[in-house]
Image 1 (cartoon, rainbow, N blue to C red):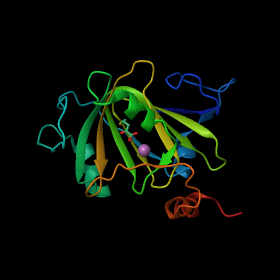
Image 2 (spheres, helix red, strand yellow):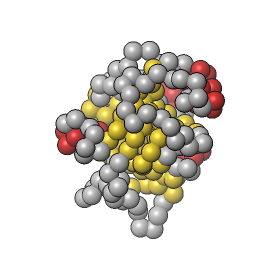
Image 3 (cartoon, rainbow, N blue to C red):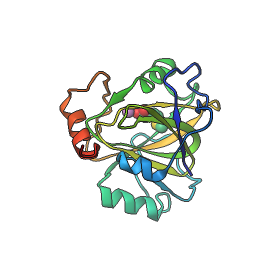
Length: 192
Ligand code: KMT
Ligand code: NI
């Protein structure tokens, strides 16, 4: 399952845990208040190593995943393998994943094998690190500032889910006056 904690702004090694000292845990409920949703699905062994785009097939797509896809409208899926051997243009991609950004749509990732970190900003602009491993499915809402990195094991095999035709384009920070960002704050910033 996932674990989340606050991290500092100064990151020397992005693949390290980067916990505060003492540790400052963040709960599932704290994440939900930011619009971040999580499920842990039973591990599925027989996903293809690489299939882009990935097509669900009976016997491969498990029932719980099918239910989430149906209820949330994720009709697109593909599979990405982040490792030095598998990802074309690996170093530039990793750099781009770790640039703080927002998207016009949800970022939905289902970790099939391996592990990694999504970092999200809370409403006071502090970084929260979320550790994901096999079976974790996470939804980051549109407009949340976030970034991704692999951990020290350097391997993440994940399904990317999307509603409609995928748009992966990041809008890098600063995007504080972007309508998507303003809409995010309207949805999740508590009333003063
Ligand atoms: C992204 O957009 O940051 C990614 O796709 C990262 C790899 S998938 C866990
Ligand atoms: Ni992103």
